[in-house]
Amino acid sequence: MAENFDFIVVGGGSGGIAAARRAAEYGARVLLCEPNRLGGTCVNVGCVPKKVMWNAAQIQQALALSGDYGFQAPPQVQFNWQTLKTARDAYVSRLNQIYADNLATSGVRVLRAAAQLQGANTVQVGEQTVQCEHILLATGGKPVLPQIPGAELAITSDGFFDLPRQPMNALLIGAGYIAAELAGMLHSLGSRVTMLLRKDRLLRNFDNMLGDTLMTQMRAAGIDIRTGVSCSEVVRAGDGSLGYRAAEKGAAGENAEDSGYDCVLFAISRAPNVASLGLAKVDIAPQPNGFIAVDEFQNTGAAGIYAVGDITPNAQLTPVAIAAGRRLAERLFGNAPPRKLQLDNVASVVFSHPPIGSVGLSEQRAIEVYGKSRVQVYQNQFVNLRYAVGAHKPPSVVKLVTVDPQQKVVGCHVIGDGADEMLQGFAVALNLGATKADFDNTIAIHPTAAEELVTLR
Image (cartoon, rainbow, N blue to C red):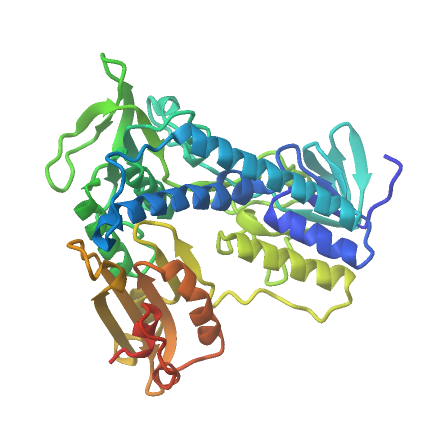
């Protein structure tokens, strides 16, 4: 390869592209290596297509409420999975091209090939060897299938977006946000959904109120959630359907085996995509969980090699990867003062049904950090005005976690309609160190769900 580069980015996902373009803005000569579709998990098999499916499910829920508001719907509203899939995939393809165009406009050279470290400052890209002073690893993560018999009969969240037809009787295994999101989407679009949870609740890494409330509402909606069930085998039944076997009965005494499913989907974990990077050649040893350790400025243990995104232990969120990549590029090529990620109050949303917004510490984590005597919690449950004129009355819940006499707000958690959109502003408040008094002194916007967070007593 004739060109010389200042910066090589291995991986064309959100973090890699953000770093590459920002570095190019400062005049760096940048090479980005990506053998697959540009945009990474978020654009292709994550945030973007997921949100499209969630929007479809939201439309279905609005149709279900339309009669309460005086609309007379046709006798039967038909949903066509293939129509939605075609439109969704076309939108993703447009985004792939937009990413390619933006990289070209920024002056980033893109090579559609896998890259592997060969030693200090050296990368093998396809059949070519390139040397560069600064190398960024940003190859993201991938979903994991368990090492059990029959696992090959199942799919992961990646496979969900390839489904040509809607599964009408789906089994989802997992308790995290991906399992909760996909289960809610499928159920809202008309599928029968069963979930297997190895332990007793959904969303164990979130505030307990959120997981408990979500599980109650999902069950009330008709999703069969079986707790205490650890799948030990996926089987093909005599009628051609799929099923599972478990080591023991669930907490409610469910059968240790079941069948009749047309889709089994594992959403149990994701793993860093680092196996083919050649880390041993530069003396980088991944952590036991596979992540590449980085310091607060994204430096790995090897000089001149950096990592961002889902291959690091930082929060596995697209905006985190983007922010890390941009700050790194600014530090390396923009003569900017050293900037690092501020990870204390990173907001996140679960596009479940109902949606969840969360920022800061959960109540249980706040007690671990500060001690129970220093923590005071404010919580309220209410019915969103959207449901005022109908018989269906799902509860929304808001919660503030505060500490010490000044009642600094260290956690803000919402489940219910609008949670996904309202949390961004409250995340700003937490990052500014807002107290409960600051919330109380803010005049409410009425009638909204968000006003419940500034009227808590």
